[in-house]
Length: 545
Image (tube, rainbow, N blue to C red; front, top):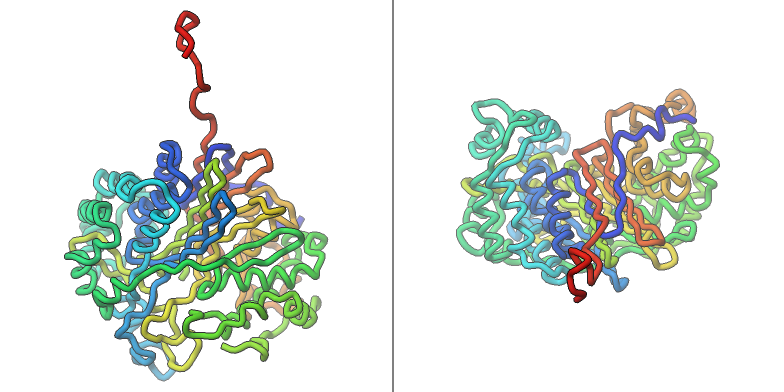
């Protein structure tokens, strides 16, 4: 075994038959479980968890962000709800001044008002609830409102995130007052009350996405650079069909462009299918080498082939074809690291959160949401508790490229809310935050589950690797550094790759197992038991009903 401590997981899974909620914060998982316990379905629970995450994980997700939700309903319907942000109508390909090295001057696309793309999370969440849920918006938002108004105890994860962003947070009066009271970061165990945000949540609960049409919308447009009232009104989510791939008898479904994951996870698995991955052994030098080469191929092709399909002709069918995978596979040298460029036949953030929910009826939600970078654009909408996204960072600031800025263009994303079936029955659902490292990490988890036959907890916690073609990043538990260097890899040890994955595995008997990894405050709540059997009496003398 080449992995130090493999099998010694830092967290424990949970198992139940009546429902499962996996999020990156215990209180958000509790919110989702509260809804499931009271009769809501998986969509109701997922939306309740997301609203709660905007309170307890404000550095990662918010109503002014965006994301992707992958739903599989009990009747077999799949839908991907694209709630990704768009470039404002007033945006232009050359809107950012560049220095001689081609970098944006003053980080204007990273932090501040000009970094804000059109918020899209709220209308997408409202649409998902209305189209697929069973509860009202007001009802699913009650746990979030409670957490905002009554407060919660900050975790070390939140406190450390505040410390990482403190210099920028201090420049915004609202963010400084909330997260740096008296100039000091909120400490782990300290209660964080967000009264202004609680009031905003109450207005949203009453009005839904129409809340952006009144004073709240005016405050958003005043604070968020080029974003206009018309942009807010036109932030309509799209429903898309997922990308379908197959791997060793499993059906793998993921989001389509402008998300990268469905296409490139399918592409990578197609390439891997021609190798006996299991025999290479998890974490061996040759296994890591193969993963690295496959990752480099995917990122080479992604650079020119994945973008908003309304603006760029994305060759999806070719990318996920078995024949294309065979041609790429033939170029892999198992004895030497390769240098990869996009196939000539093709043309063309790291701080996020993920929720995986399933109910006993068979409905499944895997959704990844974000304000993009840690604390987004690091500006708040004064008096509202809302934190702006910095999604404009995802565009290429250079004109004339597939990912260049164009008015109304949706951002591309690496989000990978994946659902895997076998014989038309769900077997796994998973996802994670982590920017560019997301879909490669999701692919590795699928390989862990299918090829290495790991239990779910080990699959989500196991050490990961990542590369785009430069340094090969490896997490600490991976040992064969010298062997990888001998194969030509420039190896770099890093603390973590990607963020906190959570996942659900489904058994044939109707039971579910949930798991969340050590890389975030992930927590799993499983529902078991149930209501009393019909006809139960309180005493032997009570009349039968």
